[in-house]
Length: 215
Image 1 (cartoon, rainbow, N blue to C red):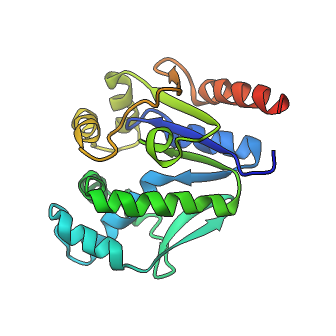
Image 2: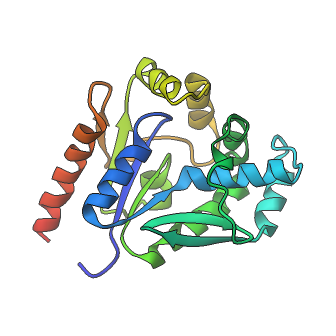
């Protein structure tokens, strides 16, 4: 197969998307794309510029005008703003709270979809998010949806030192009108409530490697 491959890993907050996407990408030599970090970068920039993140028109205006470009370092794609990547800044509690607000703007999601599809220029991808298999890359060769109980996901966030309200985030993500969090019809669902990251990623890799070997 000469064309770039896309492995979509979707799921709710603290379902293990990021950890497993990194493991899978490293094991296969693919490029890792954290789409949530892209939305976080926009949220950070809006806060930095004093934009009201509750005002979707204002957020959209920023998204359509900011100097944002894709960069790939160590097989990880980042969204740079004025050639700067705010690695630490986008992980603050304030940015976490603002992210679902900016992500709900329809034109922001259109902009992000186009930018995320551009990632194919860098090669085969393991892309994590909430609507990758259902919206960004519906043609992805492999689609996985990670899930875990609300209690388990809340424990994971607490262990990270985050005060994110997982239940509220779930409601926000599933109820937004544009590209809500949902399971793609042909996605493989993995409930990892009682699995380690290594066990979860092993399930994904086993499936992908077997099918790659037959291509």
